[in-house]
Length: 301
Image (cartoon, rainbow, N blue to C red):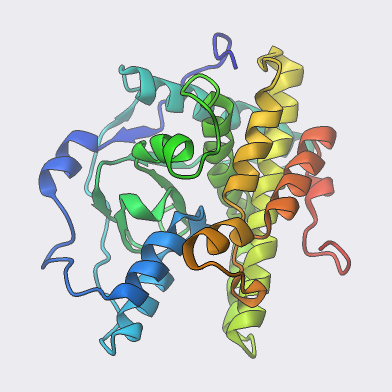
């Protein structure tokens, strides 16, 4: 993957140094039992929206009150980080801004890009108290993507999503583009409608099935960005797409549940199976069209 022609975004907020010195959860993060660790750490590895739900479920597993460890992200000046990892994130984010502005303009709409907050270890957010183990996530309440870049190391070492740091680059770009996909959903009014439908759902399994459609659509939108970026820059190297598909497979619900507990519970899926994640990313990558990403159609899954 080559980023020479990408424009670096000025919408990156780098709070890595300060957040690393702040430490963990305020008031202490101890007391979480095995069930909570499974919910937060294993399921939290999935890229997702509003992990406050996971934190609350973890507290309820222990018979405690829902977590209140949320708040506004501390003020941080935005710009383009100068270190290699931070600049890579800014370059990918910048190109998602440019491509989605073009896509929205063609639809007669205006795209308002998100902020992306880099942090280390933990960070307060309006959605939940972010921790590294959760993986990257998008918080619709403040329209920010939260990313501890140590997740990039997890892609290689924990998930086996890629073989080395160079091979991981497009996989890392896919991760960022997936979270930007959630922001696109928010811009299009999809996330608020799904939230209402989940609140009205008759069961947790039904709410989970709606979340799967949200996540697979974000995978497809990430593929649509990659299609447009490739047409603009010809930035992909041989094997990059295969590597991203391997990453999509590595973080499928079925594979992660099998690794964590030795069996798979489809009703608990929140992001889709490995095969589904690969298929929907390819739908977006082959077409470059938002219309190809209708995971909410009756027979989509």
